[in-house]
Structure formats: C-alpha cells, structure tokens
Amino acid sequence: MDNKSLVSIDDYTKEEILEVLARAAEFEKNPNCSLLEGKVVASLFFEPSTRTRLSFETAISRMGGRIVGFTDSSSSSVTKGETLKDTTKMVSNYCDLIVMRHPIEGSARYASEVSDVPVINAGDGANQHPSQTMLDLYSIMKTQGTLENLNIFMVGDLKYGRTVHSLLMALSHFNPTFHFIAPPELEIPRGYKIFMEKNNIKYFEHTEFNDIINDADILYMTRVQKERFADPLEYEKVKNVYILKNDMLNNTKDNMRILHPLPRVNEIAVDVDTNPKAYYFEQALNGVYARQAIIAKALNL
Amino acid sequence: MNTKKELQVSAIENGTVIDHIPAEYLFQVITILGLDKSKNSVTFGNNLESKLLGKKAIIKISNKFFEDEEINKISLIAPHAKLNIIRDYKVSEKKIVESPEKVIGIAKCMNPKCITNVEAVTTRFKVINNSPITLKCHYCEKITDHKNIEIV
Image (tube, rainbow over all chains, first blue to last red; front, side, top):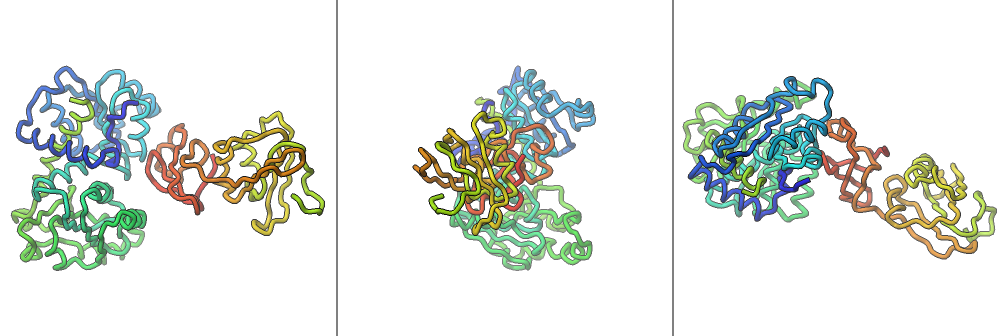
C-alpha cells in the first residue's frame, strides 16, 4: 500500500528522476555503506534474469542488507499453485522491501497494492523495467553531463523493446530529439508517436542505418529478435542491416556514446568494443549505483 | 416519447427511461446497473427499430433515479444511450451518458498476459479517449480499444 514503490518509470516525476540520479552519483563515489544494516530485502525472481538479479543483489550487499528469496519460480511455492497475491502478502510480512521480477505484465503493480512494504519492479513481462531505465539515464547523464536537449538515436527493435519505450517516456521530460532507426516491421508503436506529438517532442524515423548517426549524442542499440518475425525470410532480410561496425563511427561526435541494454548478439560488431565511444559495459556497472539509489529512495533512507 | 404513435414499452409514471441501448448489450446493461436484483418494477423492450443503431433496446425503471457515476458505467457498451427522467408521465430532464474517467471491474483487459487475466484481480482502467472509448490498463499499461472491449 506504500507508494514508495517503483513499478513504472512514470511513477517518478522529473524532479525525482534527477534526485535519484544525483544519489546514484554519490553511491558511485562511496558504494559501500551500512544504510541497509538490519534490513531484509526479498529478491523474488519468478523467472530467471541473472544480470538484473546480480545487479540488485550486489546493490543490496554493498549497502549492508540481507537478501532472502528465490531465483526462479520452480524453487518457490508457485509450483504448488500459490497465487502472486498470497506469495506477496506472506513475503511482505518478513521483509522491508521486495524486488520482484515476474513474467506476467502488471504483476508488479498488483504486488505493490497487496504488499505492506515497497515493491521495486525488476521487470514485469514486456511491460516495465524501470531500474534499467534509471541506469540508462544515469549513463547518459554521466557521459553527456546533462539530460537536456540531446540527440538520441534508437536502433533495432523499437516495437517490442520495453527499454526503448521506458527510456523514451523518461527522456520526454528533457526536450530530446529522437531518431528511430528500425525496419517497418519493428517501428516505434503508434501510441508513442501520439505521445510525442502531444508533448511537442521532435522525432524522425529512418529505415537506413548510415551516416545520419553522425548527429547523435547517444546511440541506443537493441537486439533485433528473430522470434518477433512471423516470416523467417523477413528476419533474414533485416537482421544484418542494423549492425554497428567500427568504421561507421569515424565521423560521429566526440561526445557520442553507444549504449545497449545487453545481452547483445551480433548487432554491435566486436571491433567496436575497444572504441572509446563504446559504453555498454560501463553502462551495466552503472546499474548497481542506480539500483542503490532506487532502493534508498524506496526506503526513505 | 412525445410522439402520438403507440409506445413499444408502456409508459411509467415516475422513474428513468434508458433509450438507444445497442440490442446486443441489453442484458449486460441490466447486469451492470444491477437491475436484475432491483426491487423496482423494470420493463424493457429489445430489437426495436432504431434509425441510429438499427436494432435498439429500451429499459424503463419505475421510481429509480440514477447517480451520474452509476449510469456512466454503461458508457463502455452503450455510448449513445440517452436518459429520460420521468416525473408524472412527463420527461422532466434528459441526460446523455458520459464516459467515466476510470473504469473499475467492468471491462476485461485485452492483453492475455495481463495479471488481471491470470489471477483474480479486479480490473482497473483509465479512460484515455472518449470517442471512440479507449482504455489503458492500470496494471499492464496496455491499451484496450473500443473494438476489443469485453464486459466481465
């Protein structure tokens, strides 16, 4: 019932986003602290997600908290048919905070309503994954010094990619210009275009991935997933169009940085990894600081 | 109701007439308004000729006057419904149904992967557009448009 929960990136106002990012910078300077000493955090992963789970659990450990929970639903009471409501109610009696990953969309919002302690959504199906958005924003802030007035290029699967959608919503507070590069099958959904038009946000759509990226401050790459295509031929046609290669970066801006929510498959060539503009591995590390800041805010610490 | 022609559902002395209900939704409107449990006398006609809807239904409830909030629940399925408030056999007031801001427990979320379709959760939507009526699920945040609105 407590609405310190973070379920959707829209739960944060612009001011709260900036507050949490500033806090993340403090955690980066001093990652180890005892803010969570004596506190128990439940880490409920109803589906496996090693990267997100380790990032949250590292954040909790660095703050001195204890972790209880499970890493996939086969080792929980879900296999006995317990409802999410009952599991959440039971666990919220034991702990001070719940971090939850669940394959069903809307599960985190529901859990936040039945739980007595705040719930942090670590991904609910294809819906929301706000801690990923906060770490993306933190990475942008850190590399650009600001979130305002940036040229953001998003490439790949813009239709199903929840990280793209949440980042778009969050950046809409900061007067961005968006460029979307995607095959027509994976273009940004209409609902988001209506949102941008209503809010006077400039955006451009492209199907070619070429030197238009020379304007970019941020190049946000995503994976084009084979399972999204009804026709395998269509996938074969587009899968190699959106591969970022090192020589494409020659004339890009010096401040430009490449982000990717990871895991990548082949959409960023390995030779890009050593380019100073490649930022995706540092981006992942930023996730720990962003999550420390999110936890601190949820518990009012 | 002021025309001389014969009324297809007999007049009431005092109460509410709900007109222009799409014929296929008559019984759902009855359920949503709880008329199936009402002690008032309720008369209705279905599959009546309508220039607007083709076939329409009409319900007359004696001695019952709805709160706006109550009646607006039917806007999801009967957006063109019109209300006539009857006092002493005369229409004393006309109202149209307006979309509510929130829809709770009436419609189904069209997203099969939504928690409300998996567990016993009361559905909740924000109405993000009135015409055509468009709902946004409070839980999974997906849009259910008017073509896909199903009543629980």
